[in-house]
Image 1 (cartoon, helix red, strand yellow):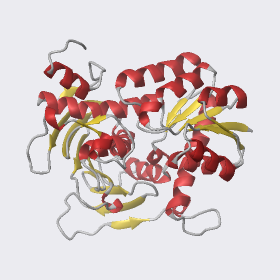
Image 2 (cartoon, rainbow, N blue to C red; image 1 turned 180 degrees about the vertical axis):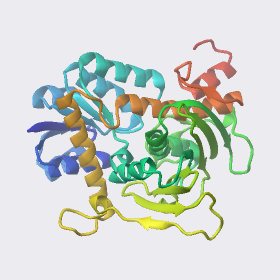
Image 3 (cartoon, rainbow, N blue to C red; image 1 turned 90 degrees about the vertical axis):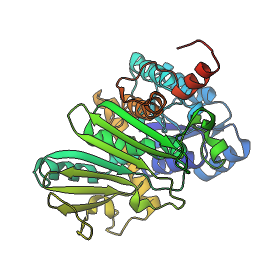
Length: 376
């Protein structure tokens, strides 16, 4: 039986606890939360003890896996604490606020011999494997380009750290490591985003999670993967959210595959080298993800639990077999690197090569340099 503890008992802490409860072979042993009322409600719902200090939780419940479901500024400390106790870690996205923190987290888990996974749940979708099989079978010819779009409802800066982190990671799943990236950020009126437009995420939208400094209301990004495939990403700041717009197109020489939606995936196929207005997409069903164990269609909550269970299961298997998780800490860090490279490229007005240096937050450095401060 794998013992699992959850740190941070808000919305995602509840989702993770539901996944743990539903996953055979897992036991929910406790949670940690600084908000007393939130902790009390979580404890009553799941019948597990709640602590106001994550180190006490780790010491007194001795979990095998710690789920870090706090907001991004509070990821590093519990990850390091868990790693220091030999506890494997399943961390929410984005992995950290900057690459300095992310590098420390990845190194600590590596040095302590524990596995670090990041909850980019789109990686768990069985549709990804289905798409790979079709690509390998030559159904769309040779892959030459990836296209990605967000689902709207947020300004680009916030979206990059919220759902854009999933989108970038989904691109990496099919494209691999990034060679270079070029980003361009604008405000809604078309003006280029500048130093005075840098904001904290919750200044832009108080309802969003705290993800530190952000910039830009629209974003347009081009990048090249080391394997030679090109990608374009757009964050158009549509006022309304449309989850069917969210996802990636895998463009080949003889057709293309579309993967859509932020939780449960929808897949479509287009045949032919060109795609003119009016050309049809063919829906591609996959019962493995579309249907539950009883053969009934999954709703959104059921699909989320299904994918989170697959992510948790993969982490447990990775620990048992001493391999990297499907969405490793290094993957989460490299995805954050793409986000920060978007800011850095815009600041430099040039494409930036990977790995990104220096590792400090590019918007913090921009502010410091403008103020005449020295530093990396």
